[in-house]
Amino acid sequence: MKELIMWLGLLLLIYLFYELFVVRKEKARENMKEGKELTLLSKRYHLDYQKLNLKSVIRTVALANAFIISTVVTVACLLRYWITNFMLWMLSILGVGLILLILLILIVYSRIGKHYQKIQEGGK
Image (cartoon, rainbow, N blue to C red; front, side, top):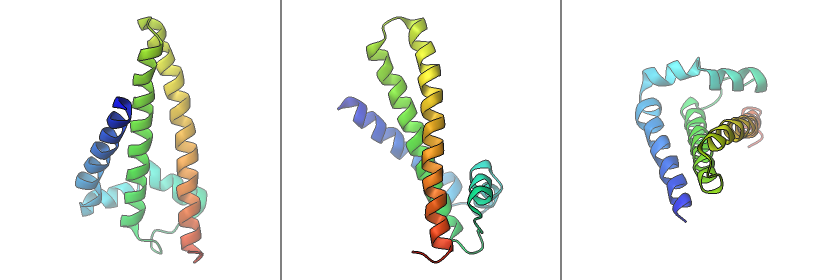
C-alpha cells in the first residue's frame, strides 16, 4: 500500500511539474516541439502538429513521462526489500531499471503515436 501511495505521489508530482513549467508556458511548448519526444513521434508516426492540438499532445507526453519515471523509481525501490546485499541491489537497479525504462518507453510512446495518428487521419 505504501508503494502504491509513493507511485501515485511521484506520478502527480512529476506531472504537476510538467504542467506548470512546460504545458502552461508558450516558449516551453515551442521548445518541446523540437524536443526528442515529439520529434520521435512525428517522424515515426508521420504526425503533423499543425493538424493536432499541440497542447493536448504535450499533456499526453507529460503524463506518459510521469508514468514511466514513477514506475521505474517505484520498482527500483521495491527491489530494496527483496535484495539485501547493497552491491547486488545497485546492479539489479541498473539492469532492471534500464530494461523496464526501455520497455515502457517503447510501449507507451507507440500507443501515443498510434492514438494521435488515428486522430490526425480523422478516425476519432
